[in-house]
Length: 359
Image (tube, rainbow, N blue to C red; front, side):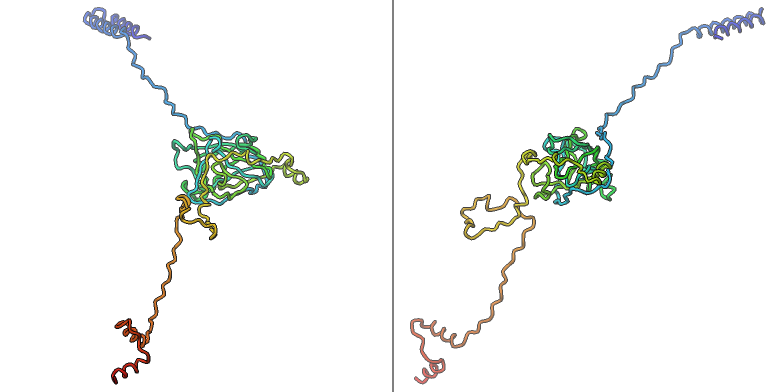
């Protein structure tokens, strides 16, 4: 029932009960007028609260996850490795061509399961270093060889891997790159671990240890022909490959093994100084040894000096023994000092002494 109908009912019953009471009629009429006035006024709705749309956070860096599954292999074995490195020798991988690979030569037939690098994550994500990297494997050449499988890793995953080894993010340890998809490994064939993407649109990732002096002759990494990363490769075999081995069949056709000319492998981006040769001693023969006049300023001093110099042995000086001089010699020297032109008298000192007194 509406408010106007309710008021009309009240007025009707009141009039019927108090027909002749004028005062009551006046009060009811006034009450009805006020109720009608407020009831017919326009109701102003309460202002609606304007709600802003929810803020959308900036999209975080999306890590490129490999789409291929991990290979199902049996009898996983260590294949190639290089575990020599120098302190404070660290490098990074980039997605830029000619600065994004490391190579090795497979020694076993099978499927590549994982590659381990020795190092640590870059300290923080900055304008140079990203939060993740991903890539694939190529055979024969890092730029044009057949593309095989894929892999990826993040900075957080590296920190977790080091933590399982009891290390912090500032300590060096083994970092595992898990391979995805079946990546065939043919003994005697060269393969390249290639990085093609760095997270956060950065140029570098990681801090990996390396050695100089060409400690691993069957490969190198992009920086220098004689520099090698510290790494390990693991190879397994699938069920089909194991059956072939049991039947005595080769896993790969030997005719497909590629011999890679050295000129096909990209050269180092810039000439590097071979530090190891600066510490080798140079043996010069007396005939060919150059004189100090012929030495140029560059040849006189090596470019790099040893951090610790060899101790110089001081000559041992033996104390001089007391020399006993005969009395006769002393007297003769005194005589010669008095008159050096006069010849020394002959005879013994005793004869000369008593002979002069007798005279």
